[in-house]
Length: 121
Image (cartoon, rainbow, N blue to C red; front, side):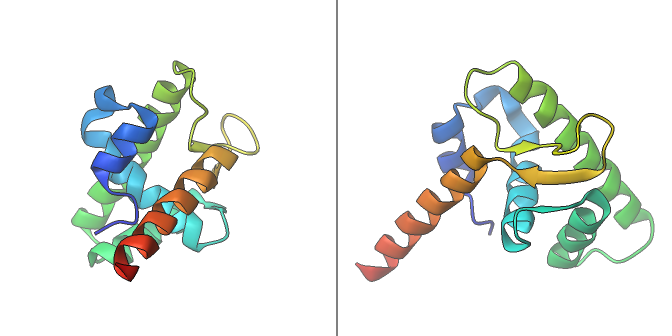
């Protein structure tokens, strides 16, 4: 289970058209949040693979392809939206460093607050 529940993400970002990319984006956001907000994309993929129990080999290569494609699709999708994106390339197009935006960090704080309040009830 990821930090960001798919339903919560969709409600907040109104990203219904994002489709099958949303779970991968949730994994990317979670890894970045646990890593201080920014990482090289290969490190993000490595940590997602570790979390999912994917070992080196064909399955790992497919995961890398899927995560890279999901990130690229999200960036293209986010560029068409009025809402601020959750992720960005801090060093510009073509860079391999991914990071959370302020909007992404705020979303995570709200999700964590809701989860803490739910547990306390």
